[in-house]
Length: 312
Ligand code: CP
Image (cartoon, rainbow, N blue to C red):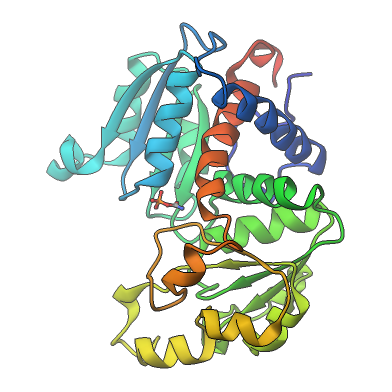
């Protein structure tokens, strides 16, 4: 058996709990490496990794590149806007060309749900999903869980609320799968029309009263409200959203309780979260960013490291 059950990391829906545990535990080992004066290890020397970004990214792209370099892999970066995709070349041709260059691993962000699974069928290389449309963002959920574990020392039994635009969020779906597999309780909160019908079938609760949710939760994972959707009837106004669901200091102060605040970024300060909260003592948003490098080192190491040849 290899280090993990699956050859690829497409999502957490089909990742066993014991593999999530191993990924998080190994993430903490690499966190120690990141605290050393020399933050580089030779684990992936000789491995070729391509980062395929067909959609914008700041944190995930930089974090993967840094993780790959910290593991001594050879790194190639590809962004759709600077490639022949802009001349009409399709995903299959692009990927086959890259495969012909004998890559060991492709990290891909793509706007189309299911594109990473599709990619894994075209190539022998290990495929890691860096966010596929509204489907999954497994590496974000793993870094979120690592950050929660770092803060509380456990995941099992914790009460985690995910707040905001759930229906369009790949972060929400991956967190729902991952957190519940690790024994946490999950409540979703947001405008009713931004919560998918039937989502309770995944085992989560839904509560549209943010104050009740704050009272209940150990941690809030606050999602970005997509400004591009405003003005088309999805979010009536920034001010209205902030009044009903915004995580403001005033709102937190009325509850007089400790609560951990998370956000995957990018943040709309003054909309879903106020600056005083994002930069305050309860927020672990920058810990999430640092843990993002460590968890991506863990993922790359466990998928491409010494046991890789034994995987099915
Ligand atoms: N959290 C996240 O995926 O951020 P980016 O879009 O900047 O990668």
